[in-house]
Image 1: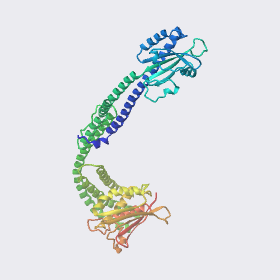
Image 2 (image 1 turned 180 degrees about the vertical axis):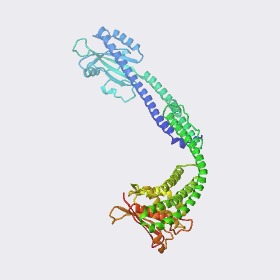
Image 3 (image 1 turned 180 degrees about the horizontal axis):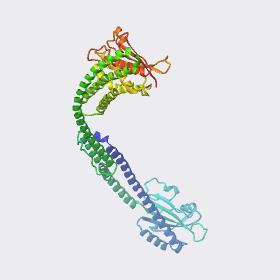
Length: 545
């Protein structure tokens, strides 16, 4: 894979690398600066403490050996010995008290005639008591004539310590003054060398940190991401055996493990899909043969039922008291009519299945529709066996919108093939208190009749509104089409059994008769009329939930 700088800058690896690199670089620089600064302070503290300790040692020796300053020669030997123990001590001067605010020179570790001093130096004893005084001054030249002489403004290279010599007698003022000069230049050279060496090593250290950080981030983040991404690309290209195997126990390992689980599930799903497709193809081959046999049998039964309905119609006009037997005949005739409708739907959905290469969720839904319609065939057969009794109505409240939504799946193949669009204007949350199965039968019959009347296509509009004048809560439902309409002289006959305006072989004349029986069973009435513009409108009422 080619390295793309722009793509890399947008990656998590780049963001972590830049952020962590900047933070570690700043920390490293701050640590280096802190070390050099602390070493400088330590050097200054050491030299200042060295000067102070030397002055204290001189004070101790004078108080033990010659507090009266009678033998300057011995004091000078002490001073020389103390100066020789550390090359950083430049000079040690000793002064004795000479009045309240003045001192007199006693001796020095250097040549006495080269010592620059002034009696006015006694102000240090008078102002500081027995506390030492520290000055950071240039060693050459030294100007001690005034206290302000120490504020020269030049670069300091040494410490100058003034330590009053305490009196052996308690409560008395200091008897003298020790001046110690310590050279810091040698330590300055060492400190500057170390600082230069530290800053010189800082760039390679930072570079090493960046390289180490790059390697660590590549190992922790980039390498496992490449493995997982590569496996995803292979899976996307159709390699169902693609897996990611980074040997990790952290979050990256968990992501790879979840990806492997997902790939395994997908592989199983694809295998099950192939098996199901093969099973559906086998089922389709046998189902077509069974459908042909069933159609032939139903055509024969339709002929028998037509003859039977003719006899029932005559008996109904003569024998009004035998209404139960007439209704049984109509329900028996409905067998032939209702079996044809779901079988047509089965054929339509099977054609959709055969036209597809793979099985999707939509295909499963259509297979469910096929199974539902086949189940209806069985139900109709069972109804034929008990046709001598009027079927009981099982009323349950359910939303109007849900009924229309379910029926849409049954209407879609038929309406699409006729170039018809159905527009629904019903309250989705309005409730119906009806028999669900009989409602499916009622609406399917009415929509199929409207579709048959519209060979050139068009629109069917379904609407519902409450009936304000009804004694009980009811819906008035309208189904309007843009078909050829019905001749006025035939309108009173459309609900009679065996009467149809369709060509031979297109209808049995039972659909509207069954619709009237269903509506009346629910306590309503149904009417049909021609529209002023074009087509016809069917109006009927159903109880609210």
